[in-house]
Length: 361
Image (cartoon, rainbow, N blue to C red; front, side):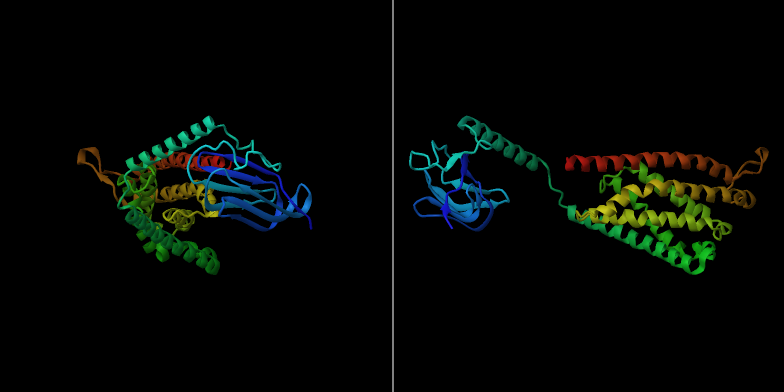
């Protein structure tokens, strides 16, 4: 096999030398720096003369550091060498006559003045980066905050997962009969999860999360009205099938939302989980609101009959004002809340996937 010399292209900066060797599919690559400041290159590959063994040597104009960085691709071999001193060279090799196989790499070529401007820009960028980092105070409690948020989301995920699995298993075993005892089998866990959810209103106020206070308050307050006021205080509502649909829709949403936030605490992302987090609410939130509205409407005659939570009036004004009037007003507010939450979640989804598209482009 004939030993040939490949085409080599070079460029420089004040502190570095770049070499591009036009040799594809390289094998047995050997690059070394000799004591006389000479670079030795030998490899088998496909070059200007086909598949052969290629080699060359370059004795540099001035000393370079012994460390050599190189990267082989399907088309070429890129070599990066650092100069011993950061200064501009008049030429690459010690001999004044340029070797025949050597040529300027115009893709990377810069004049000395342009290289100085590039170097100055990099130095300014590093100075600005250091100054910005120095102004940003590191939070000494960041690890503690992330640990708290991770554990909170983990506990909520486990709680709602228990509810979801319990209801799903009972549905497959008992069929429609499971609709009517949902409250008695899952209420304790739902009480626990929804009382814990009050922390989602407190966390934004303490600056622990970036989520807005108002959307969290709307969701937590709305659910707790349904759970504690409608279902919890009226035994007549606890055996109705609407409880099943409300609890099932709530738990379906949360078994994807809480693990998403849990993984975010440890800077981890699963693409499928992210998509479910930002897409599943589109059908489930309106369905959940409809189910909650059905529960409120079914409770109205019960509150009228039992007079529970009614507002007693002085004798001249009448007996009392039924709590059902308050719930009728709440029905209107419920759908307004759905509009605000829907808009908030839509903005989150659009912002999320718009930023991802920018990264891809």
